[in-house]
Length: 288
Ligand code: 13P
Image (tube, rainbow, N blue to C red):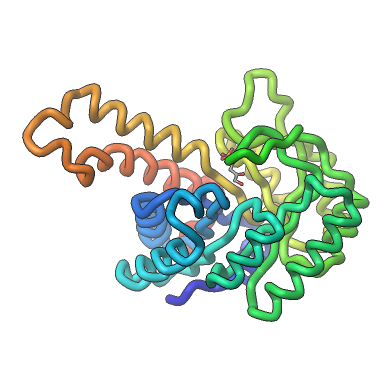
């Protein structure tokens, strides 16, 4: 199946009261493992790529071609969107040109008026090509590929204005942060999420920082309109754990255990388990 915009994927999720995982990919292994699990679970999926990951893989065209080729050769039939995560203004344009089917323009660091103006421009460009757009107000805490946020709560009035730019889904800070949650984390702010939902006028909402959010909070967020949940760090930790245990067990020293296809196999299996768990938790299994 050809890559599609994330609009219908997320509107279906909103209407069906489940969440769709947006899994950050870093290389061929992660792309393949995510697609394989989505197919196995019959779940729609978003492959999210940060600009840092795009650079790491060689460029926007490399990513688009790799994803398209894997979807074709692995005979993936579930809906897949290729989504730019936390894109800059220029990066969003490059992703649109290269064939991404969805972009997040993250103008949250700009003054509101500038964020709104730039978001409108990206919306016009993306929509002329059938590409969906996510935008953000109220930076998400933590650090991801050099993007650092304070973890503030989004202002519902700003959310309303951003929603009115014509975006397809909205990311708003509600106490979520990227990376592992600290011991003293207060949890998601559901009062604010309710206000954001009312302000967003029915748009599907996006929850960043999906790593380690307890299931009860995830489900409550989905109830309040969250349709896309981003997960990155949890796969990285699982992948590292699996790879570490392979090496610590001395498997790379036995026979041809140094072959990267073997060396990366345990990490890949561990990361696959995370994708399976998230699909189960978010309720997107059999929603393809
Ligand atoms: P985590 O790394 O905390 O899972 O967050 C991922 C994310 O929000 C990507 O935008």
